[in-house]
Length: 132
Image (cartoon, rainbow, N blue to C red; front, side):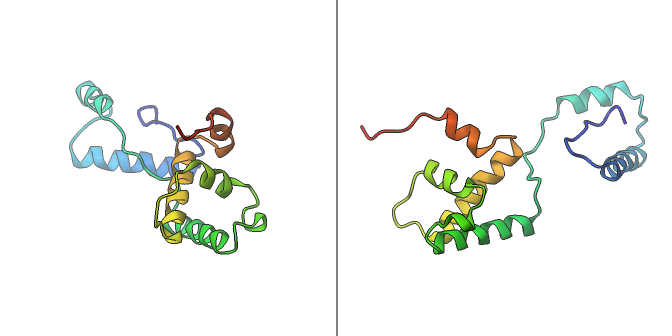
């Protein structure tokens, strides 16, 4: 349990599955938990960025953003105001289709969630851009 990093918001069942998977891997590769050389090698490994949301959740949010765009960016379709904030922050591209814009907004929101950044924080800390 001490060798595996703890994930924020991880449920006990998920933690147990991670431990079980690690033990299965160790058994398969004939490694013991007190193998210092292996532990040092694992500490050198980096991590891969992963989304915390399921593909279904991400698709639903993209669909919600599409609906928001189609309905004139109404406040009722964006109760948190996150779609509006991100839409205002991201540069608009010539000829960009609404579906592409929705994906771009969703990707930005997903990145923010994975990096513990809220749209409000970015909005407050980002100075305005002016055309030169």
